[in-house]
Length: 263
Image (cartoon, rainbow, N blue to C red; front, side, top):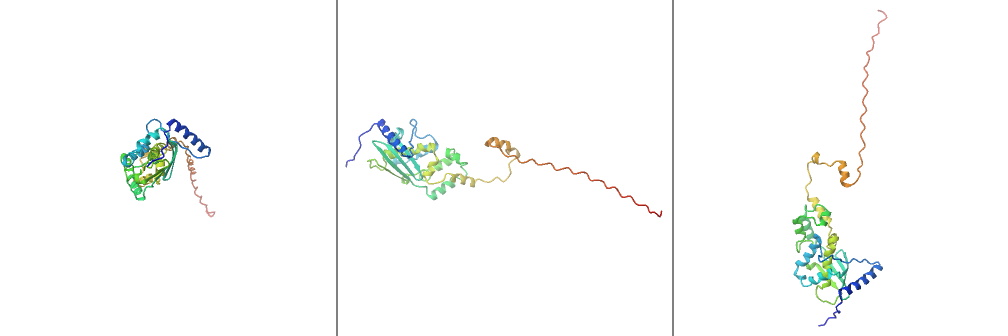
């Protein structure tokens, strides 16, 4: 069997070709978002690293991932768009190739178990997206097959290149590109998986016991402290007017007895 392989094109020429095509798309008003890797490290944050680690955990992807790393590092992923359940990309190879990856949404039962297991372990949405979580929560979220990251069976991909392998190097480059994109926009992982990140925080709040006793007086932040903390000016309650002093009651003068005119 023979394949119509394209002749090798140097990286510099590929970049020029890709830049010209992306410039055309911008002029047409189409969004263009390339994956830019600074140095050799593809992902630097918790979410980006966890995505890449998840890919490398599965032997299904082992053969093509090294070429994908090379492609994403040299700037071959010239456009990557992430939406609900889908990654669409343009990869520069011998020519420009269109890559589409569909990501299955997290099953309802799986998401419910994940939410329950993380209850009480996520303090805020900011901490969640920054990856500032306890080791137990991180391990639960990253658990193969049952965590938040997709297993091989939950990924479907296609590429316009002539390679008939189940995963070509262009698809592998895009998968790594997703990890790099999560560094800056970790919320896109939840978008890809069809779940709401705020659900984990909501469950944590619901599972937290309510304080039964009022805080000690020394631990209550005064109004001026609140204003300084949040950078706002709090409206002052109107001053209560002191009650008007009551005038002393007048003493009643006893009535004089009238003298009888007969006396």
